[in-house]
Image (cartoon, rainbow, N blue to C red; front, top):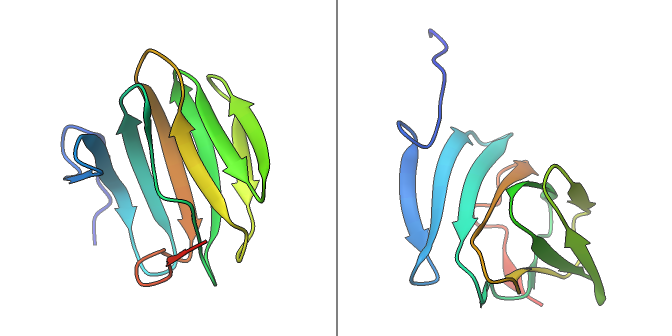
Length: 115
């Protein structure tokens, strides 16, 4: 199989939470890389993954990542790892959209429960 560059322009796109965007840059069972865009004043549901380890990396804007009760404010070109089983929630508490990568190993499909 030939490898091809991926970007928001050619990756599978989906909408979550009503107006948040995701682009599946890598969509495998052992690895998932998603480029997400979250408008201002939005958040995802607090949850955990039993198996998947994740890394959130901010491309633009500011992301608040609540991990096991501790809030981390991540600016551009900053990231944070979330271990399997750890309750977490991504929030955009700013006035501008935030764009970030969510890298998961293995994929989080079928591996998400409310926390």
